[in-house]
Length: 206
Image: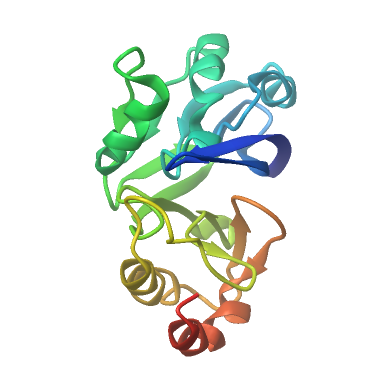
């Protein structure tokens, strides 16, 4: 039901560029999938999809390294791109007005392969950041909101440490402790593993 493709490229914002490896998540069954965060290179993502229908390309936020393969993958598959509209300014940095997306809403539910994916708006890393919760699978796809070891970075434009902490506290830590957190970069973790460290994160302003 859950598969991962790791792609490599660059993340650019505020005049800086960094080499990054991204997790691209596929959720579905033998017939259809949703792709979460089409990063860097559409070709290996499309190869992993195979002959399955892509019901949506969900962007957890619009930093370029999470959306730069969304356009090409949409072209290959015909799938709609979904993004929370609060990230419009970041989307335009990558695509201008050359490519459109269908807005995601907090609480929206997407159905794929017999499971339900629920959209949780979790601003902080970016204004339109979302996490994708799959209660049927006991899984959360956190984008760059929550990692193994703490919150996503908030030191760049359009981000806020206080906001991301509120999002994690109110939206994510309310989920079952056994929920597996599949992140946008690096290793997976769980809600239970990260919850005890919230006050530590706040104290160090991570």
